[in-house]
Image (cartoon, rainbow, N blue to C red; front, side, top):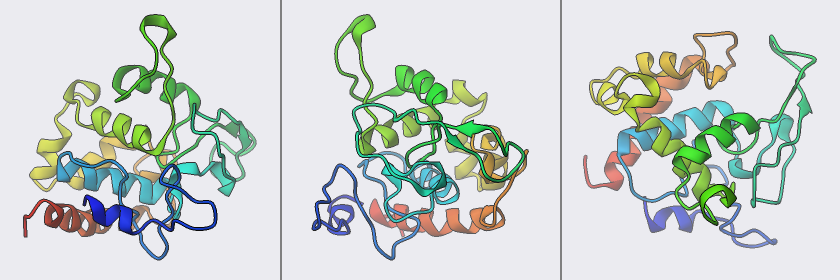
Length: 201
């Protein structure tokens, strides 16, 4: 995708590459450059279901926003629908990470932690959100199966089912949303874009 992603950022009105906005473009491209196109397409599919918004990296559950990307915002907002109504959630960012999941996965997969040893910190910048999710999805030991290989075999529905306990909006579990049934087709759409981005027609 490269420079074309940056060309879609709306750079006025105080916006910056730290919180990109894509107007009339869904599923939004990734900030992260490089990587396997099959995993990149999967990431865009997950975020289409979890945070279908033109400015997804700063999104909190329920549509509010945060501005400080130095760490996960860790704001617990009331859940207003679904099986967990009445509880609260800290879901935030493009992939709607709850705080505990972000803490666990960023310690393993964050591309650029700051500091050293026990004093490391893990920012929540858009590129870091992408980097953590990419490395997590690409790690066969995290899922008990090689998701990249399954995707190359065309088994996107199986992959979404494997991931649904983590991202419940994908369906196959305790909840679904209006977009769940469309996700395999969304995946195929963005996979075509990602493959074209690396010169594969």
